[in-house]
Image 1: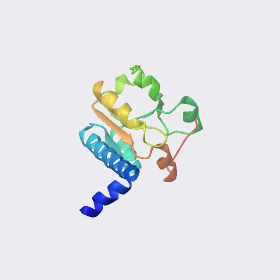
Image 2 (image 1 turned 90 degrees about the horizontal axis):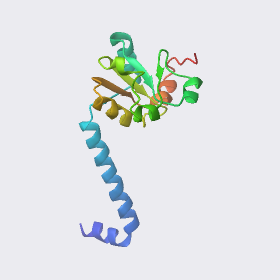
Image 3 (image 1 turned 45 degrees about the horizontal axis):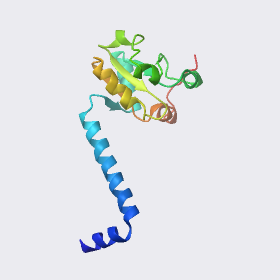
Length: 142
């Protein structure tokens, strides 16, 4: 134990960075357990789309959406959803909704917003479109 204290005293910056990383990991773990938004892998998303008629909501910008998106996806930018402009998707409140962004980092916050707005089944695509493309799943530009 004394070695750890000596290290902390000798390297205060490294110790602060390490403690900060531990705090972030604990926070992220707690948030993922407490949120109603389920993170789904690409294969689970495909099953939701095919078996339960899940609606795919792409929260990227219109320009990113035009470069390639999941077939049948609805483009509603995250900024629009964060401004509580849910009129394009409010009719899907009782259906499974899969949120998609480029890397999977934006969808968590948007998902929490949708669950607060009354959406019953909100899912976020793990890894976003980057992971979707990596797995060679179909992408359309129409």
